[in-house]
Structure formats: C-alpha cells, structure tokens
Length: 297
Ligand code: GUN
Image (cartoon, rainbow, N blue to C red):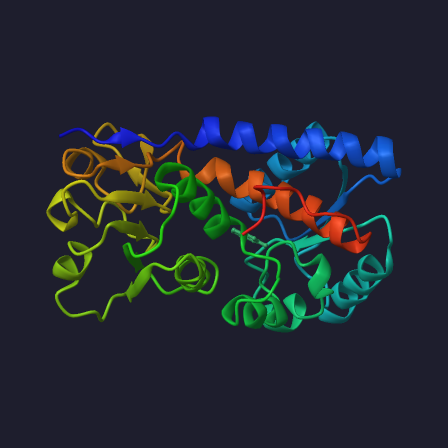
C-alpha cells in the first residue's frame, strides 16, 4: 500500500485564501483591518526566518503587520511594558512573542502578560484552561492546523483511536485536547511510555511531535492509519549538506499508512496559515462579529 499524501502546502494556501477573503469583507463592510504584532527578542537565526515569513504572509492576506525587534539584552520590565501597550492598542488584535526567549526572561510570565483575547498562539494559561474545559479559546496554531487536515481527510473523527507522541505544551497536550473534543479515544505517548511501538500500532490517527528525526518507522504504524508528522529536524547528509526530515521515517511509514503528511510541505505551512486564521478570529470576536467558518476549532 502507498499512502495518500496530505499536502499541507496546498491546504495552507486554501486557508490563507479564505482568511484573505474574510479580511476583505471585514474591511469593506465593517471598516476593520485585523492587526498582528510579532515581538522578537534577540537574533536567533531560525526565529528571524519565522518572523520574516509571518510578516510577509500577514500583509499578503490584507492584515496590518507590526514587528518589534528588541535586543537580546532587553529587560523583562521593558518587554512587559511593550506587551502592555500592545494590549491597549485597539488596532492590534493578535500578539505573538516569538519563543524561545533569551534565558534571563521568564517565558511564562511574559506569555501570561498578553491579553488572552489577543493571544493568537493560545499559550496563555487562561486559553489552556478554556481549551481543557471545552470552552471557546484561542487554540495553538500547529495543533489547529493538524486538526483541520484531519477533519478534511476523515470528516468525523468520532470514535477513532488517536495516539499523540510527545507531551509538549505547544503541540502534544493541546493536540490531545482537540482530538478529545472531536470524540477520539486519545492516548499521549512519550519517552517513558512502555511498549511505545505497540501503543502507536493501535492508532487510527498517529500524531508525531517529539523532535527526534525519523523515530517512528513503518513498524509503528497500523495499516491504513493517518500519520501526521509535526517534526522538523535538520540532519546531515553523507555528502556534508543538510536536509529536513520529520519525526516519522517517511518512506517506511508511507508504505503502511493510509495517509501521511510529508516533511517539508505538511504541517509546517499550516502553522502560519492558522496564525493568520487566529488573528482574524480574534478581530471578529473583539468586534462582536461572527467568527470565520471552518477556520476555528
Ligand atoms: N517558536 C517556535 N514555534 C513557535 C510558535 O508557534 N509560537 C511562538 N510564539 N514561538 C514559536
């Protein structure tokens, strides 16, 4: 068997198109331009790439994009003061503080200083609690993107066995909450899970979010399962160059799975598309308007 490829690049283009169409209507009918502020502290090269890409795509869908680039030595007080001013700025509907932050800054403190209604990452403790109790919240972008692709592929997810490998606050835990909300039977597996291969082989939906290159092989996959690979790992090739691989060994897994997301071109492009969707959702909620259909959890 050779798996259907779930093309995240195509899917993300469709999501961004829907966001752009809704933004155009918001501008025309309500005079509202959704605004996203991204805060980058320091000059981590990978973060620089993400932030540039976020800014470019924000503008492409017709939103206002604001970038705040602060030195790596910025004090916590100065960063909190910037967040406070963005919280009070009515033209800004979404605030994202790029992680990781330099070591002297307390990430939890900084994230929890963002107005939860503007927390387009869904990392604020209030949003975590709201999601965990099935209430309306901002939902982390990567798990939201995975959920959209799974719903598109399966229709209803009810009753399916889902195994999420990885227990991070950013992906594993919110992914499990979202799958539970869609009535999956959910298991979170991690580095201390016994017989992890056997646990994974029970999954109708297998989400890999561990950050270990090609850890999950075809032997871990139930025939016909849907495999969502959240990993983005850069590894060295034998010729000295590098290439991107996921947490799933694509070749062997795709021989067993029913559907699979590739790396690159799977989950990755969906993350920024969902950030834009979340910013639009935040702008609609802030103005008491209907939320965009198909772009929320
Ligand atoms: N760094 C890597 N991924 C993310 C993300 O999704 N949000 C934020 N704020 N920082 C990140």
